[in-house]
Length: 538
Image (cartoon, rainbow, N blue to C red; front, side, top):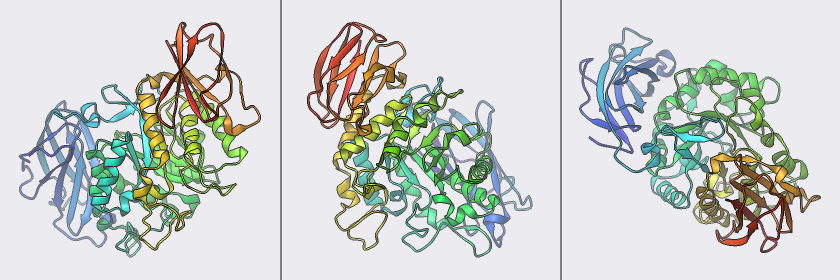
């Protein structure tokens, strides 16, 4: 039975050595069910089940099973070796023969399709530490869209339409929330993902309703990046539980979805620099992600928290958000703040803006909506202020899955806002497609910040028009972003010559010839007063 991209489900209910007769392709999802022989007052707390998977090479990997309601348990696992795999279960209740000592086998075949996620394998950090690559070393450009609430609230038909659209627009990853961000903690059925009826107890039906929405992201050939729990400045109930309970909740979510092609964001929107919050989340991270985990993990702070988490064994890359401020301080902390300096830390980690300003969200200071031009500026700044690894876009109607037919309101919305479906085709989303085409034609993973190239800022007294530059170490390529057009003088002594300079229109995707590159400095005039990207290459 071939079900990839997808799931191979094998129910093990007979003797302990039952053999699953199906096969699965490499990096797909093997899934099997276990049936408890007894009832527990609180299965989520009273029993734990772990499966050991043995690869054809003999390497072993341990994965948690998750409670599925009643006496049902389930495990999902993504095999990374071709050949015959074996597995065996171990339950904390060794007398429960339905969960303890079960075993089985399945075969894994080579992947035969063309989707990069499966053809090239899961994500890891590049050898130089600055970007993401697939298992086989193929570069991966993180170009995310933000659909925090969408995965939880969308019906399958709408979700499929959304994913197809974003795939066509060039996105490579969808950022979602495994638990509700801000809009309350109950789903459309009026249920939360856990309850306190008999101590902390998970609600499997909450996740059963969204399982296929998670899987559908991979089916469209896009990566998942999921926040596990929301910090929301410390006011979310589940993040104020005892650490052992928080870890138990988070490990359940990881057990349920870690077999997909996914990157984890342990906590979202946290002010981790306040009080003891950083130490609190360090303990959670160590409990949730054991040493043998293989998915990438970061955290999503209210702005910057890399100095607290960089040395944690579970922390693989720096996630931050420049957010939705529009005053001078907010602008300069992106262009002149930690993102432009911390990447020099050793050993290096990718630095990624997970939440620049969202299109059509109301800014904190001026109370004006961010438009496509401000969104483009934040995206290009983010890609050039640190070694280029990727960036995430967001639209205010999409991230909270706003439907004008629904009387409920989300964050910073009114009757004039577009629905999520209308917002899919916004000017900002079109700009992301042009951004993707620009960087896809370059060895973007070799770009490093190079502000010394800017001989003088043409808008020296206007922080909103700050010019950002990056180049490759060998000088064969340079990229300069100008938020607004004015004569630009750049130092080109570090670049290979002869080279050619071209203007790229980030609004339309069109190219305009600029000049041949000679000498030590070059002065160029953009085609108009809008924003432009300059490419200089050998």
